[in-house]
Image (cartoon, rainbow, N blue to C red; front, side):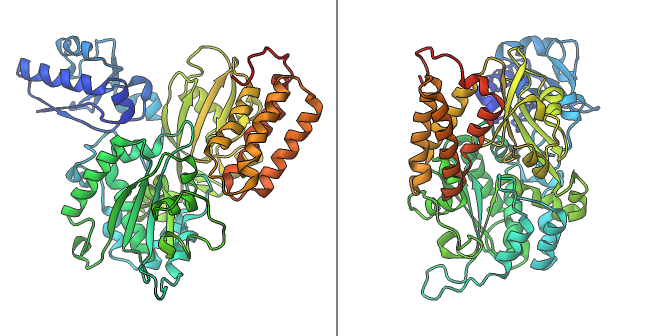
Length: 526
């Protein structure tokens, strides 16, 4: 029986993967072929989706991008035998340069296994980290995470081991409180940055990896309960995670008496409410508790007073998903990748005007230029690249002079950028950077939780000032006013939403000043 793989990932589905899978099953049955369909995750080579893979004795052979109408011809030309004569044949999947040149640790299984098969997961090294974690003490688990150099992949890049150590040592007793004595693990899966999809790709393609990472985190800090806070715009991830959690419970990987160890970890899935601000950890915790998603003042830190006022580890999907490898292979094995204080690998997400959009997992240190051209293939439009935004809608717009900086937390910060969640959005030379600066302010205006004045009011005033600059109204005075407004937002905002909105605005002003000096056309701000 030959396995034929068609992804069930959201991107593949949006490009017609279900229709491809349905037609393939029909043809297999009609022709009486000895083949079975497996719905896997996406390899992250989005320009080739829907990507069909066929098992052969030499490895999987890839075909893509495939439409349902291509299926009969592919089968006629020997697709099930790995035939390479068809124009859609990409050769052996692992030999595709885009994939071959990556260093996949966190995404090693994504696109290879059936996402919901625990047997598949175990056969490909799954749960080895958890099994080891159950044999060592909590402090030893934290030691390994500290040794790995793992930092938060959600954007702040705070050392994960240090956070875990704080929660491990925190006193959970809150006399008179309903959750007194408990600690929590909260996974921030509210992936809202522009150009980001790595969390979703992993949750849909390897959900047990996230579950395993959360259980290990619970063992490390003494937490018996976890929550995944998932953005509601991810219905496919919601279905897959719900099924995966139920199967993990049935097999003893969640619940009471974990793998016969007498340890407990219960995991619950909660949906967000379509608010970008709930990607900020304290706003997310408020939302998780059933309150309005508004930012909390710090201190106290969530590590001491987090979910339901109890000590809480808050990490994003990629951070927690890195943990099973660290426990299975050792912290030093993970730290051997990367550079400086940026250890391990980072899943970079290529989006915007690029010929080959998708996910690229590499050790820290690769340059932005390499990601844009060696992997991204330059622009889809064929026009020259002009600007790149790294790190989401609050990241700076970087010109070509900054594309040779290594993708490392400190090095990129020195160049005026930030790694953030690893999202990269590219623009060709047709982009109007004054409008992009306006978009940044408008985004903050729309998404602000409204708790602090610099963010709530500053973003509104920012849009108005940029509109006046674009319209050539008192340009010099308004440029000065815009800089002052950015200073106020940066220094006075309660969280990074308002505090970092000036980054894209200032970078557009600094690197693309001519776009703010163009004569008004009468259509600005539309």
